[in-house]
Length: 313
Image (spheres, rainbow, N blue to C red):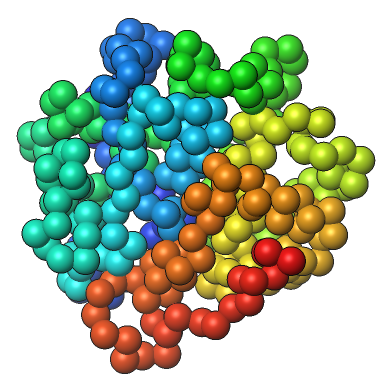
């Protein structure tokens, strides 16, 4: 179940690499509850995430919002890479700090339990089977849908509205649109080879923000008056837009605050406990600017002073 190269995590990994860095692929592990490869069992799984990561925090927000945090535990990786090691994540600032449930100190150890020959880049989100210590799924899109659809017996009453079964085709199309043209675009734009390619992607991104701003002038959430998975998908990119993508990804045509309805919507979501739990400005800035645990000695690794308090106003 591993071996495919995964591109989602570009948005967590767009920082320029050192000339001597050896790039290793991120593998896909995609076992599912819907195919009976994985049993739906309370207390069986642990989601490993980074609070900085837009992919992992989508899954964490959904788990909390649906009340699945009572049956699926979570562990958090340290936001900074180790100096010179760009392929792994540690569970703490010290090398000997272990996840209290998995008893591993590095996420790669859980990937190696699943794939003994694993030598790639360990990535989050990573859903780990606590019984075996193996990573069983690391695909955000799969986890979002599988948890919403297959864990209903443990979810709260919000689950029915969160992934509506009426107009399901339209709903999935809207989710795919956000995935491709909002979530993936900040990573994709760092791979352009021409000015024209860059400008095309910029236009796509800001056209979508304008479209969502117009929708939110008429209704409370993207799908109407009830919060759905679409709002989780959009929120994680909005949160990092003014903080990171505006500067580092050259998505600088406008700011989030230039879209009144979209900005008000993002601030409103940030006050919902499940969203607020994973709105971590410090981890986001550390990861995207400082990058690793070396002392800060160059301008490009300085953590900027940004006005995060405006999210609370």
